[in-house]
Image (tube, rainbow, N blue to C red):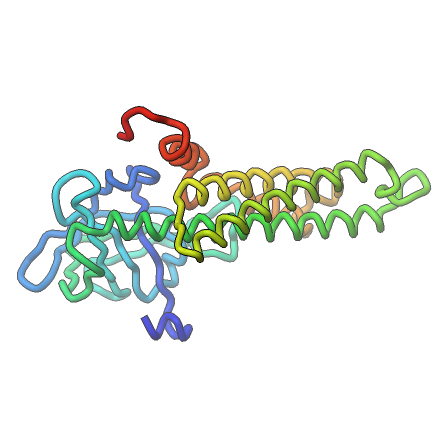
Length: 273
């Protein structure tokens, strides 16, 4: 852990698979115990920092089907049988390298297991709460940047003899952007405050992520509109923000899964399965 915290090494988390994204309990990468090692076979998909990671915290199946059979193993770069794809080409987030990982009879020491065998599902879910709050905060920050870029452009860009900020339609777009950001910031701040106080409410974290992601997308869309043709150009800041914003209703748990978490926790009295 220390080399990662000191910036000497890069770590990645590998949960998602080609056939298991939101459905974590359906993971199929298998780790079979062989003496003092696990033999890992399977693959992971869309792994952030996958091309750069020195070590990968990998969710594997060590037990039976379902959420009760998962464990976490630290697999180091260079381990025989562990291979990494070339960098995947993405719509946005170009500064974050993403890759697919493959494991072919990859031997990993039992000592590299994190926590109890078959106990990883709870660890993963606990991490998801903080991850979703972090993503919500990122959405607020991106939206704030898009808003600042838009106000600056609207005051500098002239049309019909005056700055476009002088037109009511533009001012009202900016007002709506400001309001969306303020609301997203408030909900995210409430969720983070409760989490830091010991109330790691998964439903509230999911609500914050969804609301902030939607606000971010809406604000970035309006930012491109205010910039007009300039906002559609690759050298425009808001063009990049628009592409980056599209990930947030998907990454860290899709909008649909977030809604299901909220519904089961707060609005649905039937079976929870």
